Image (cartoon, rainbow, N blue to C red):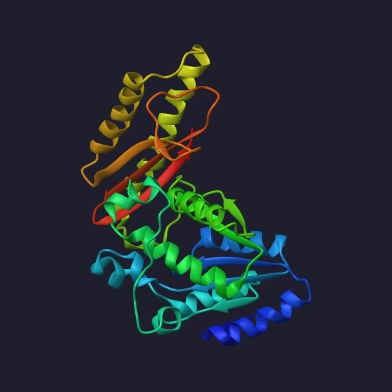
Length: 291
């Protein structure tokens, strides 16, 4: 496994692979790697000739300085995990390498998807994320890029970026990896206390219950699920989670996947996702489920 901190050195190595027609898979991360990240790596290893993983905590996608400062960091442990699964190249740049002397994000015009849900709760987050993703794509020149579905809004927005720039990069969407309780794996889970971990498992249970109610409705009716019934199911989820004093819901919404709009009437022949963000103690977690 080769490790690079310098962009030019990495590009020289990549150019050799490109000239030999080898395919490159890319997994951008902020470190604190868990089995969800490693699933992206191992999938890339199966599908491409060379797998590159980046580890970079991008400051411009944090609107909360404490969140940035508290983001878990353990490069030595991350490198051991990457080596054990067979990752070929790791890129660990610093801020100057990625931004030069001007630590600023670009502004993107990709529609309302940038300003709702995570975009509303974390102003500037997606501009920062897209800025660094574009920079990394330019450096790595991957054939395929691998992202987890847990961060569904991020995934949807990156897809729009690739479409808007006519990029040849293939975006691979990998299912969320969960622990046996159903809790989505996240770098932030390590901040949870034992009791908070127990409470956090209720998030996916609530999503699963919501999906069950929607499917039960459509199993008995060919009509659309109207806004009143949809709100009833959503409020039931919120009520169940609010019974746990450790959980504070930030949002719970159903999204039409096609255009990332808030769904009001569900049609039986369309796909939707229920997206949730909630604080468990002081730790903010996100998750989603396909409806």
